[in-house]
Length: 313
Image (cartoon, rainbow, N blue to C red; front, side):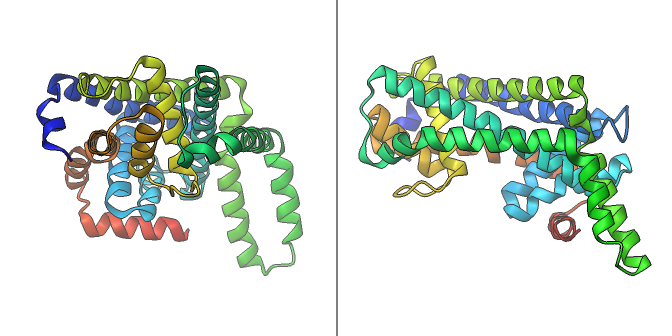
């Protein structure tokens, strides 16, 4: 990072950026409570919030295996099957991806109408982005509708197809399938589906507020209007989820490319901005997550073990 860019930072805005990004963890806990309602009508929000923070800490520390820490902890805390919470985790990922694609679609439409000059590394994104967004959104909507209307018939057909298994193995499979269907049961309620969508929108509004606050922290060295922040967030959310030819994946890499190619930001400034995006969205919560984990008797090795065991279930 460039020393000049750091020395000119407006630290009050940087600290303010922590408020909305921390708010996303509470929003995620509230959304997960909706997923839990068919199994537990009144889940504990403090339990969900704690598991969410510890879970995201595990993701930062261990990568992909850490993804499974949160559903495992929620299952243990709320005394529901782990399989049902893995199903809830899958639903959460679907809704998050849907929101990311919608934000990216908005970013694409604004770039094309604003006449911004797109560099060669982002040319592929503009060319293929619209088609990818359309197809991906349709697929996700079909998946949501399948969960909503066909989970029960699929359960019956799947169990009927495996009746040939020995009794012990069949009962184990039956238990797993029933738990999974229970985990996606929340999508069958109109009120629950609206609530999940509302919490998803709130989450992305909070993320946008974090990005905007960070842009204000860099004001004077990087100039991003509110519309520019949304465009930047759309490209970053898409690029972090998709391996873009010539760019690759990863939030920091995509952030640097978008800032330099689309907004003409100098490389050292773009690198500093990308670092703080990564720090705010991943690293800032780690100290709190470690404290909560220690309070619950979980150390580094326990978290890693939980992630591996949950992934195997």
